[in-house]
Length: 358
Ligand SMILES: NC(=O)c1ccc[n+]([C@@H]2O[C@H](COP(=O)([O-])OP(=O)(O)OC[C@H]3O[C@@H](n4cnc5c(N)ncnc54)[C@H](OP(=O)(O)O)[C@@H]3O)[C@@H](O)[C@H]2O)c1
Image (cartoon, rainbow, N blue to C red; front, side):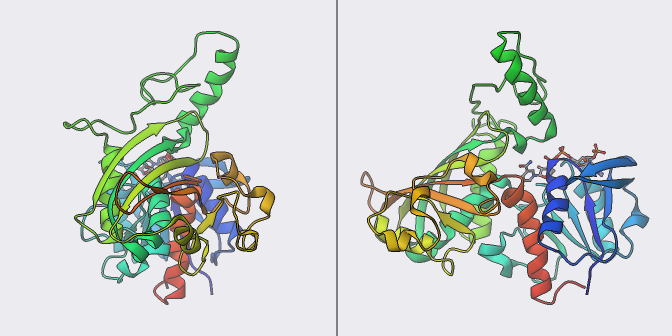
């Protein structure tokens, strides 16, 4: 049985949604209905699509619509989210407009799919940096309860959108040729080539950026821990695709490096996680998921490998001896796939598995 599927938005996230649906053989009935702000033909995931201008009649008859549009009052979810659910479709939304509204489930399938009850058919997918962090830390939280998180991010330019990727691509040759480096001031405040910018999304009155507050608020909501202490510093780095995070955890119960690795290497306890952490003293354990020569630590380049592209890679697991029950880890994921497209398609797959779609 197939489902009638719509996609709103054809930026990098919309492109990856089309690709991930195809790669995972998502049961699509007929053609995808692809929508954006205006009608044209567009190549998505190496295939040509007729992109329709969003209109209410296009949502009629759809079973599920993946939203990958811009946020805000004139953005896709605010303009079309309710139109889609009123037409009877499920909405799985990459945007941030409704994530913190208590009436909307905010979901990472490996962690809290049970938040979806069917009462509200508009499901939100978290911010890319929140998704990879909760996949990595939820198993640790279940085992030893997290009291406090200090996280620093190293986020790719694709997290901003296509324009930022084009900017970095244009800046590289100009930088090498020692020419003036071009940049769009509405993307980042300065050229990103060979620089790191500690500024993602707008600043708030107390000096944090909205991206940092998203990590705090969304993680609390997903883990259902409204009081959890979390502080974040979000940094944009000159990487095209892939976010990395250095995460410091303070736990209620002690957890050794070995115990944490055992948990994170166990697919039952840690779905969606691949550990790349070595050299290890236990080659048998290492071979469960990886060839020994790969054992070191993950970087953003690793998540472009097909076997890792939908996973959260974790490494550098070590005890932090400066606090009671401290643990450090490093994690990396593809912000466009697990941080966005793969997460929404996995949510849809879970809706099917639970008999909720259709
Ligand atoms: N990039 C990431 O790593 C990432 C990760 C997680 C979540 N997200 C979220 O995912 C969404 C998409 O990200 P992106 O990077 O692909 O964005 P993008 O490059 O800016 O593309 C946005 C797309 O949405 C369409 N759109 C905007 N407003 C619309 C409206 N009112 N009605 C219909 N279509 C509309 C645009 O249409 P036109 O092409 O016609 O202008 C465009 O195709 C954003 O909400 C973003 O915050 C992104």
